[in-house]
Image: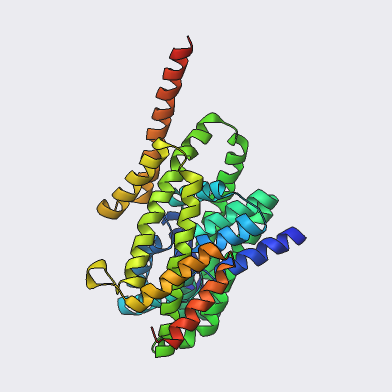
Length: 180
Length: 185
């Protein structure tokens, strides 16, 4: 029964959280409060872990919350329930887009949306910089060892066109050696 | 069948090596989808991101569904999406017992701090490539700057930005066409 409720709740979360992984947070808080499955501090821990483990945050949080409520089946079913609404919606949109991909209106709209995505990515890159290179916020000063690694890696990324995994690996190793 | 397997494999890799939410997948996506398999162009990825901001669900999932659909219709969309979520499910389920403690070890913390620096470097390049594909003229340059400013300083919701940009661009193109049409006559 709990499993069914879990699926239903995550299905609703997937359907109504718009704008990416962290948008699911309010739903997760509400879920914990309503059913008493976990406390706010449990959830805060789960969010922290989901941010550092590989994979999109929203998916990680769903698996984590689901498995903490109903074990392995809970983790798998919560994640699937979360993604089903968006798969359906996107498949419908993709089909419509395919039909109208040559329409002038659609082309015009995307011509204006692509730079908007650049602007929004810029904003989120800034906040990633803040937490990874500046000790949490820009005012608390730059972390020199982090900045040095960053400079070398930027140069590497632009000069040698290797797979991102290589650079992630280098980051991990350098971090461990110099105890970041 | 082979194509479906490749979709699953690539998106599995993207899921396994995305650290952080949404946009953090961009460097992996660019390498696997745009450069390696040529399943989509940078412009299309950018379009998918814009749509993903205003539709339900996680952006990484939405993008996977889009790219998969483009290659192999519905089944492709589903396979790619399952690929991107599978690593998360495996990692979290296998490690859930120790996850809360593992980050107390200084060496694990250091490794992840190093990874987050690498993600910053990769994001700079991703931003550069996205900018090259999206900023083509003065108008798109202005749109990019305004969107950045309102996101950073006013924390405006992405949905509002996307909808506003769509409306403004339609008006801009309409007026532009009128002016051009007027000149011809």
